[in-house]
Length: 149
Image (cartoon, rainbow, N blue to C red; front, top):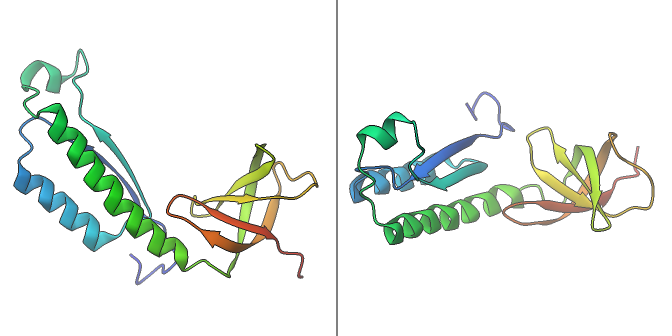
């Protein structure tokens, strides 16, 4: 996909600690994440939900401590991957759709869903704005309004 659309952003959802998940299966998930390098991974710990097939037919056999450890492993790995992906945007100008102002900063999202923060006194809600990226982190970008035409 990235060969065809280089700027594509890929995301996935993962449940760790699903009943009968083995250490080997979990390590396969970790390896897959390392290889595929998703921009975003939504990860959650399995918990039985009343009325679902899993809660009726599968024993919740993964200890809570193991679930937490697996969650932390995925979150740490994804943090490193996302940090590297976002570093490539440092110094670039991206277009964002401004959503709202929170704690004195405007926030919006790029076309690929990356969260961007910037400060400015003007009104931007609902506007497309070009932002020069000056700081990156695994979970967001920060910059200033690019006034160049």
